Amino acid sequence: MDHVLHWQKSTFSDGGDGNTCVEIASTSTALHLRESDSPDTQLTTTPAPLTHLIHGIKSGHPFHPAA
Image (cartoon, rainbow, N blue to C red; front, side, top):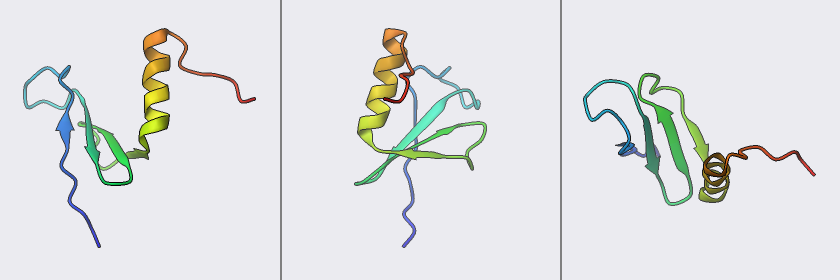
């Protein structure tokens, strides 16, 4: 069964209708991300890895070597 995703633009986008932002959609089991100028390419993840990535970017340490 195909689900229609409801995409939301980042509040940091330029506010126009241009293709200059990241968009996110969610389902009960996953988060879907895409860049608005390339909507056919999507990244699918779950909340925990995305939370770790955002925290790492904000802290200036986005990547940790594998243990």
